[in-house]
Amino acid sequence: MIKMSVYYPADGGSKFDHDYYRTRHMPLIQERLGDACLRYEIDKGLLGREPGSAPAFVAACHIYSPTLETFQEAFFPHSPEIRADVANYTDIVPIVQISEIVEG
Amino acid sequence: MIKMSVYYPADGGSKFDHDYYRTRHMPLIQERLGDACLRYEIDKGLLGREPGSAPAFVAACHIYSPTLETFQEAFFPHSPEIRADVANYTDIVPIVQISEIVEG
Figure 1: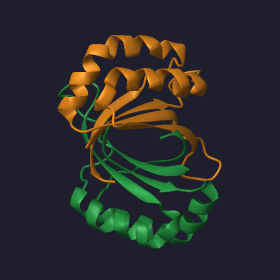
Figure 2: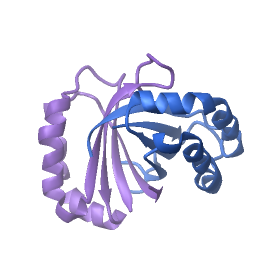
Figure 3: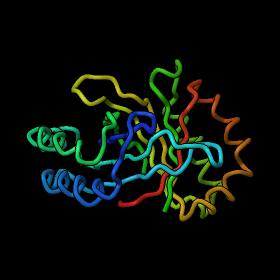
């Protein structure tokens, strides 16, 4: 199984609308991906390593998919629409990464 | 539910032993945390946003716990032992973050 993770660095911009992200953006992705999205997870950053410290990322999402090929085939046709929606909730340029889940 | 995530930046060091991480380090943490670790997930970085691009993080782990307090009470007493084991698999200084899981 693989996952695509999108990280929003806390020092990368000035706004992040968690409600829009949770109720509009991520459901849009799930609808467009269909079965290629097994599930997704949304993180809201709380703190860093030390108590009271700021988190590195204000938010992140992780989209789980059976294989890299399955994900890419399902995602790429909708990438322009999905990217166009980003300005509705943030001005942060995210870090995007695809990982293999080796245990979990 | 919360999770503690540990990210190992690809440009942060020269080595990362994925086998040791999966078979020794993470099982050590699970054993020490007991019920405070509901489950954990290990990521191995594959690629970045564009096909063929390098991932930002060579590896990451995510430890899921019922609450922040539960996690901190269970983790802190073992933190010295866990940190001391890090040199056995990497020289990368990780990014540590605790997040609330708002959906997933």
